[in-house]
Image 1 (cartoon, rainbow, N blue to C red):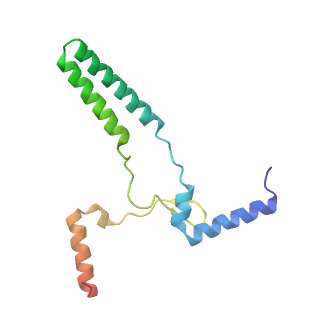
Image 2 (image 1 turned 60 degrees about the horizontal axis):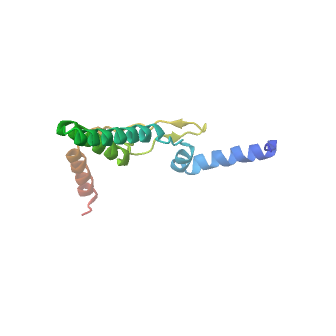
Image 3 (image 1 turned 180 degrees about the horizontal axis):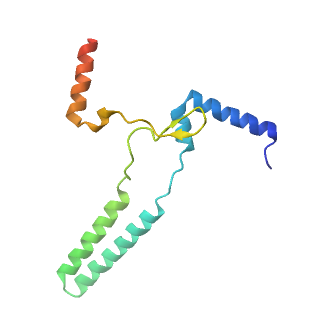
Length: 130
């Protein structure tokens, strides 16, 4: 059953209010999550092929074929259980128009680990904290 015109206006008003009150939450809720189906199919296929090569190498007394199968099987399983890489920080900021905009990256993030630590140390020292 479709929403009435009043309900649609109330829902849009609630969405705008959420976006203005808590942009990070609104951004998190609006992101679509892809399911890594292709990744699991490829890694599963790689593990099965690797196991098949391992068995064929053992059955035909070809250790090099078994070693290739083992490496392929191990790499497939490791890839399946590895966490996918995600960019750190927010994916975007919800603007007043309700659209998600990419955040402006600071130059500090391009610096190395030690440079960021030194900058933090300097800020703490300037503030008088320990």
